[in-house]
Image (cartoon, rainbow, N blue to C red; front, side):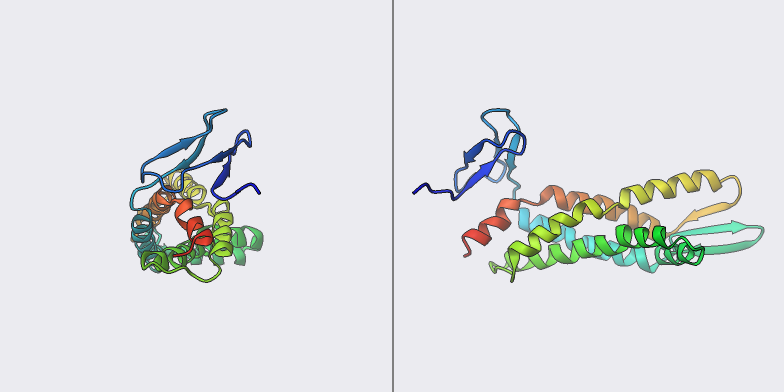
Length: 204
């Protein structure tokens, strides 16, 4: 009977490879046929991902608790937050856009952070979280739905268009939101999927 454990298929050409059970933390495995990257090891993956996840949670709270932008026009000053922008879109009858903004900038990023915490915090203490495989797959499926970068570009475009009409003051939440985008990207870059899936197949 053929041992199919520790096999990985190339994402480009589907060629099966057997990767050594334990590699160096910074090892990069490539396909023998097309040279596509199969796996990239990350040093201290769990610690780095967990630290960035905690930082992301703090930034998320700040981004949703403080004013995002302040508009000053003719002596009047108006503050806006992320959630108030969603309510404004809904009150204008644009509930589809309001729902999309709510999901892609608030709900999905928060779920990503909480799921990362659920996965990596127990692993940090040599424990395997309940339903690890299902939660990891669900977390991976959420990534395409996090569109904070697109929302940030839209904010920048709006600022450029309105800068001649009113004085716009970026709030603390805007800078936290920008840092949150960078933090989530850094956390994704420091994740090593094999660390998670090894615990599914070979729990400690």
